[in-house]
Length: 174
Image 1 (spheres, helix red, strand yellow):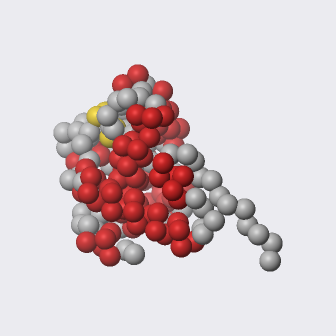
Image 2 (image 1 turned 60 degrees about the vertical axis):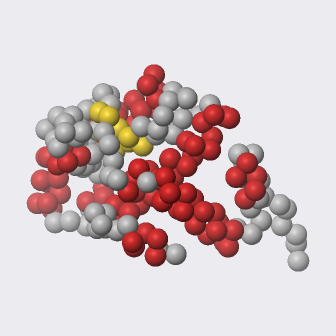
């Protein structure tokens, strides 16, 4: 199942990076499928490097450095909340990719760290070419539904595709 992803792996070297690519692609599909009929807009936001518990496995001195140079979880959350409530993100707005660091749209290093966290200001950016690939987004969507069908046989995928919600058929007691 990861063959599609493996072909697109560069520049997403880690699985974490691949998960971020998948989130952006899923948002494109959700936006395309649900914005017009339901008035819900789907956007992506990268709050930037966050001094969170994700670094717990690193040496103490490294965690200290990360804490000193990365944005706090609270400050990163300001960007996420702003993306949820901002006027420019309301339906039927086109899908946006916002960044939590000022300067991110101009220099790729600032996508991960900048001395100027955006906080409640949103910095419009352009994600990678792969993250803008509508064909790849459609393939990921279909692959995700195939995986759901295999692992959740009672899930009404046709209702999900139509936007009726995740209905399930009753499970009969054997």
